[in-house]
Image (tube, rainbow, N blue to C red; front, top):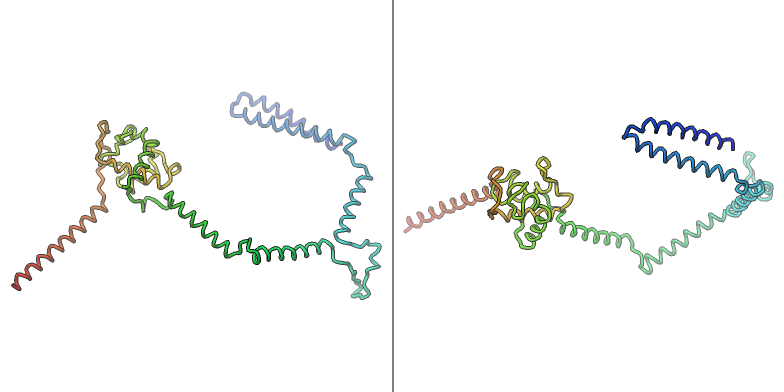
Length: 306
């Protein structure tokens, strides 16, 4: 009881100091919240100590010596039942005859708890055998592996549907009507405030001309949508749109090229030329030139033969 009174006195002093601290910090707005939390914590501690003091000071909660002895006696009896231990005063009755270096061995029986554990493992083995290998109601490792493969394949197909594997390096332009309709819906919900309903531009640039600030083409547009342009107020949409949706809205934006909205903003950026397409066209021209030369040589050869 004296210890509890000392603790109670200590916390009383803490309360007084805390109140004084709160008064000195009352003018500082940054300390008001800390003062309130500290006061609440101290109040809870005082309430807890008061309840503890009340419980420990009530005679009906005190255990008498007889009750404590009965409790320990019960635990001792339980331990003897579980271990089937022989009392120390009766160990001579189970002492074996042989002796080694002054040490005598006791012929104790196996503890019941060990027998229960052993027979439990035998019972578990029998149930396991029937469940997995006789009735087949449980999945063996091969079945579990096949099931995990099936689940993984379903997750893969779901990721493919959401375009999880699409990025700015492998994205392609979509031209089918369902994809463009989906992109238009996304554009209407998210992009109209900055680019206008006809993509002619309001706060953001005009998306219908051939001038681009961050590059045209589906790969550049996809990257711009994904990463955003924070310095100009365009947020990154990769946390709100999945890759498939970004591909759809990017493809829809590119489908508006050349529409020339009546209130469109003036061009910004530079004219973007698809170098990939230009290279393909150059290669095609070279192939056509080689083919033309081959046809010319063939014509001359035929004329010489004739």
